Amino acid sequence: MNDLTPNLPEVVAEVAERFERYEQALIDKDVEVLDATFWNSPHTVRLAMHEHGYGFDAIHAHRVARPPGPGIKARRIRLDILTVGRDLATVNLVFAVRGRDDLVGRQSQTWVRFPDVGWKVVSAHVSTTDGKSLW
Image (tube, rainbow, N blue to C red):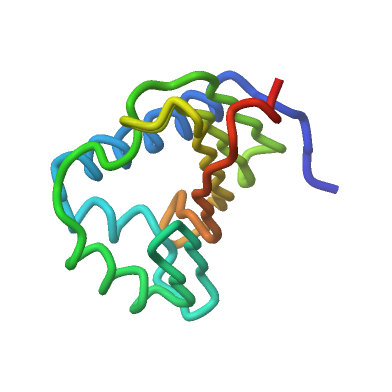
């Protein structure tokens, strides 16, 4: 059986580095990095406020059309990374929504380390909720 130890420090560091690289690529509209972050598969999903990306090709098309910049994220409230063993991780971010004090944003990603291509996001979600219901 594989070792399913949670949050091995070196694995958390790997995922954190890739997550930060992805976040910067969103700001810079670095489509090459954005594409490299996601698993190139028809099974990959990214759901967001203005995106229903079912499959890598749909996610890529949204990336190309999206303007550069920080988008709706004004500041981070909470970032949690959970790794399970050496090949599975989730990243969850809660953030303040730019220009909307009544909303809080939530972002989640599921990462898998593939033997041939390394760490890739296989599923991602971004949504907002009213700030009152969180805490």
